[in-house]
Length: 119
Image: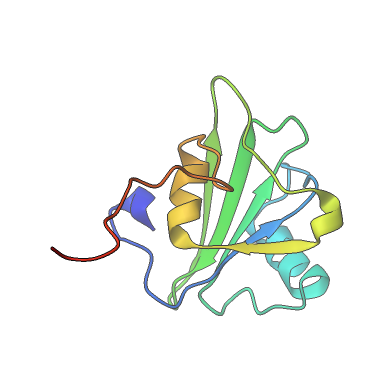
């Protein structure tokens, strides 16, 4: 993960748990949630992102093949933008995760203009 100096490997999927998650949960409890609620393998190398009820705290669960990591980030101002619980489990790109971690609207980031053709 970029937070520890390494970019997210290609092929890694980022899953967002919609709604809110009890932020008292630790890595074992969140891994069990991934396994039971998402029916996904928490040890498969994908990232799973959870948000607390206040919207100011997220936790990211990741297994790198050697061990499980749990990252947490709290915003001092504002809230993390989150999909509706009606959306179920949502996947986003690693780039969208970068926006989310910066407190930017990851759903509609502003792309710079690019030319349509050379010359």
